[in-house]
Image (cartoon, rainbow, N blue to C red; front, side, top):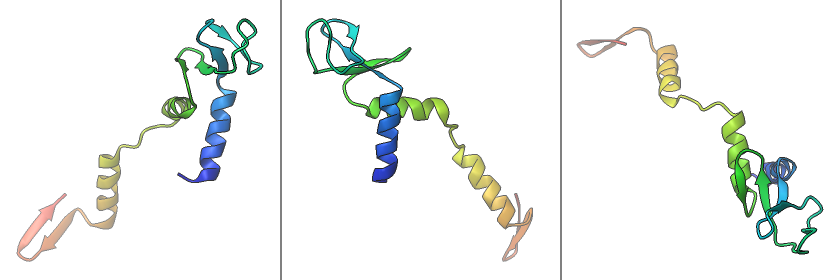
Amino acid sequence: MNTEIQTKLEQLALKRSVAFCYQCHRQAPTGRCATCGSDDLMHEMAGVGCEYGTSWIVEEVLRAELTAVNTDEAFEDSVSQCYPETTKVGWLELVS
């Protein structure tokens, strides 16, 4: 993946999540748990869960905010735009 895009997605993931101390089950927005002092923190995304790293947050944001493309329908549209409804191949007439 393009490093610039990946960097921006990671920044977005950090904005959409809060640091979370799994040991104490507390949010740690400063980057250090106020209870135990740990800086080994997960990231919590409201309504989704918590986990280490940011790749899962990026996947969740993309899944929630992008519309999936129907490749079969797009292919059929592309073919129908390129060829007329009836195409003659040799002695065969093909109707789409």
